[in-house]
Length: 460
Image (cartoon, rainbow, N blue to C red):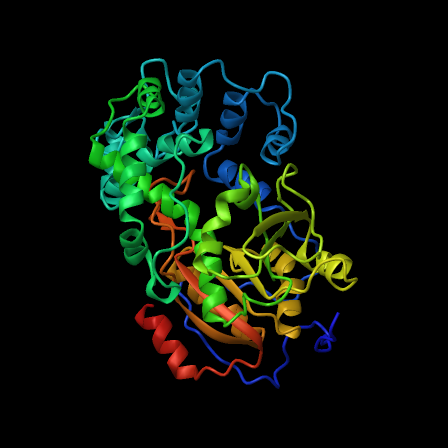
């Protein structure tokens, strides 16, 4: 393997580094950069957050899945063999139990078990997404809920329609791009390019037996065709956002995809979101984005990578035009030492982290710090995505403090268009996956301090 830049000693930047300040939103608390404990599982943190926000909700979820502990839940999410009793007798039962996990008062957080016999949780008639234990809570919550009610209506439809992706009844349009890569700058041009193929696909799904069965099983009226078509398009962008964001990074950072032997991309901090139920063809669109490429190897690395995901990380040459997916369960800096430095795995041409979240807590920052320093010191082209402008500002500040050379950041033209609801805080403003990106390469950020402040303060 060709020699790489010498790794610098990984420590907190000293005062000799010229300080650069990004104005953070007032409700973001900077996290310390000198940490020592191993990092946690994102899945475990998410489950813990549910319980903190709505006491008892995590147990309701386990009960509806016929499980006794988080460990049993994690086993299934990781792709392991479910415990005895897991599963559902029919679609009606599955959808009913899924809906039951959303039944808590959005205002006072009361669960059905907390109510007297004379009370029952009722959903908002507009969005059918949030519940209230009575008119008093609903009236008190309306000033907050009215701001998100319309988006929550979309989310309520999307989470049912996702079942068609799981069953394979909604197959995304695919095939070589009829337009040049540089012409397709975002979803508008992508939809225009795929219009005829997409229209045929959507019409077929809307008229399918699977769609009829779905809405006969959920216990609510079937929405109008325009509503269902809009949902399918949002789901499509959610699936394709990840491969097309990888393509954005390859294109913006000038990665040569016609390198002999193929190009290697590492997705770090990967979890069940990137690996659970992921099919080999899910990243084909990335290949079509670069006609004539000599092979694209994508390796998912993270402590929450699904157990059933391919664990092959061979560095053998790829067949031209192929996209290969594989995974490695563990922390990235350990993977680097065990696989990359030993030559067992090819050195990455690009590293991508979808929603690393290192701004959110000291535990997550601690888990990410060795990886961030490694990427900086080895001058590996890196792209990370975040959910919101607030996260963008906080993440930029941390990367500036770490003396990374930020080459670009902004709104992602291939962000998911499917709004995401905070499970245990449903009236929180929905966010969108990979809404913003940050790219960095090596150290010594060269951006002018004033320019950086103006861009973040003024919005991207």
